[in-house]
Structures are given as C-alpha cells and as structure tokens.
Amino acid sequence: MTKAELTAHITAGFTGRVQVLENNQPEPYFIVNPDDLVAFARYLHDDPALQMTFLMNLAGVDTGERFEVVYSVCSYQLKHRLLFKIQMPRDNAEFDTVMQVWPAANWYEREVWELFGMTVRNHPNLTRFLLADDWNEGFPMRKGWTGTDFIPLPDRG
Amino acid sequence: MGVIKKLPVYTEHIPGGALVTTSVNSVLTLAQAKSLWYLLFGTACCAIELMATGASRYDFDRLGMIFRASPRQADIMLVAGTITHKMAPRVKRIYDQMAQPRYVLAMGGCAIGGGPFYYDSYSVLKGVDKIIPVDVFVPGCPPRPEALLQGCLEVGKKIRTLKIDEWS
Image 1 (cartoon, chains in turn blue, cyan):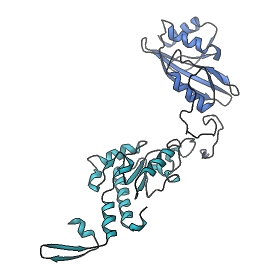
Image 2 (cartoon, helix red, strand yellow; image 1 turned 180 degrees about the horizontal axis):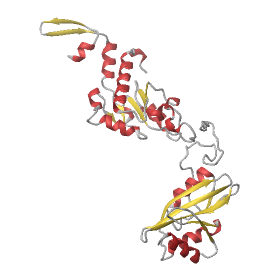
Image 3 (cartoon, each protein chain N blue to C red; image 1 turned 60 degrees about the vertical axis):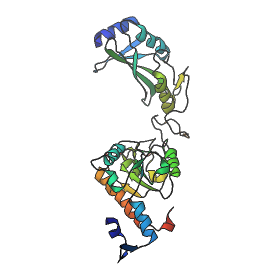
Image 4 (cartoon, rainbow over the protein chains, first blue to last red; image 1 turned 45 degrees about the vertical axis):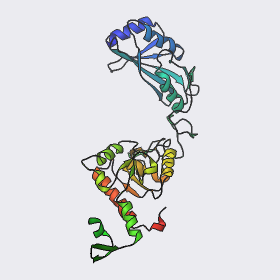
C-alpha cells in the first residue's frame, strides 16, 4: 500500500486511538497511547491488509521533555512499512513489551531499559546487557547525563 | 650469513669453519626481535589493516611475525581497534595470560587515546595505556600497513636495546 492508503486504512481500522504525524518521509508516522501499544502492535501484525510481521527497529528517544519509543515495522509479504511511536513522561516512563507480537523486540527493549532507564513491563529478561559489567553510573543516553570518564564535545562555535 | 653480519662480533676463521664470539644478550635479543609472534586481536576496523598487513601483499611473515590465536604463544599484542569499558577487563586479562617477555603495540587513534570516540562517549576507554603498558604507538585511523610494519620494526629496535636481566 502507498503512504496515503496505509494512513487511511490504519486511521479507519484503529479508530480514534491513533494520531497521524505529518512528515515528508516515504513512510507514514503515527503516535499511539502507551496503553494501546500492545493492541496496536497486534492489529498491525494480524490485520490481513497490513501483515506487519517484521520489527525493523525499536529506538528510545530522550527529547529533554519526555521519553519516546519509536517502532519501525514492515511487511515482507505486502512490501510496505511504517513508523509509530509512544510518548511517556520523563519521570515515570513505563511501557509494555511487544515481544508476544514481535519476538525481535527482546534485545531492543533490553537496550532501551538499560540505556534510558525506561521500565519495560512483562519483559522476561531485564538484565545487564550492553554496558560494562561493573557499570554504576546511571543511564548514559539520557539528556544531561555525565560520568567520571565523560568528556563533552567543546563548543567550537 | 646476513644475521651474523649484524652481530657485534669477532669472527675468526679456523680450518673447517668460522668461530663467532658475541654476547648472550645480543643473540637472545636478536632472536626475540626477529620472531615476534603476534596475538590475533582485532576489535574494530584497524583489524582489517592488520589482516592486510599479515596477508601476502605486505607480508608480516618476512619479519618473522606469525599470528597466534592464543595469548600463551604470543610475544606481542597488537591492540587493533576501539577498546570499550566493557572490553577493558578482558584486554587486561589477555595481556596477563601472555608469557613474558611481552610487548604491546597500540594501533590507531582509538587504542592510543579514544580516537573519534574521545568526546561525548560513555563507553570507550580513552587509550589502552590506561590498563596495560604500551611500547609503541602507531597513529592513524586506521594506520596504513606500512605504518604498522614500521611500528613493529620499532618494537624490534626497542627489544635490541634491552638487557636480558631486564626482561619482564
């Protein structure tokens, strides 16, 4: 499906609970409520006109005001793809795992948990993943983070 | 007889052959410098240049350098690539497993001082000399095979200046 067809199909199929984010990219971009995340993922995966069976990427974002998690999914069968994201307050960021829909989310969610400190509900294995074994300096991908060995880029303006 | 010419020698020709006098130190350091077996240890793109240097075009083998997959058999560790904080204890452990005398060559910007990951990085160790002693630094990002070859020759020169009772 094209970008316009995908947008129309999803806004009709997931009525009222999905917000379209206008962009100039070739893929449509949606915002969903964190409470609807698993239902939306299941809808994208199971809908015969969508068949989003492949989670291409899952990335955490710290905008400075809130946390976001961006999901990139595509369908090998129907050759289309889209992006969607959830937004959470910075002080209480929690979202559900989508592993029951896309098992590939396992390591992505573990990475987001470790580097941003967002809590992933129902994840089976939230343990030390990418950082050093004796790491105790918090969440390095957060805005404003600093550590003992950290040298920020000087302003050469 | 190329090797003998380089020794500080007194050569006396006697019937049936030649007699060479030299010091034990000179022979042992020469042997060591001419057969530096290196540890296969690449953590980033410098390892590609290391492989190119070991392959037929540049040919480490003509310096007597053969790669070893085990630190127990290696004389020199070529730190080829970025060392992260997570990797640092492993590097230290591999270095400790090497038999003495042992040498370290830090190859490329990352191993020397963090390289492109010096600023704004939470994960990269800023110089492998913070965890193990380094004999020769080879700058570059990554260094060309010629530079790496020269670095290895510099290690050989350094070995030739050592005294065997200082080997450690």
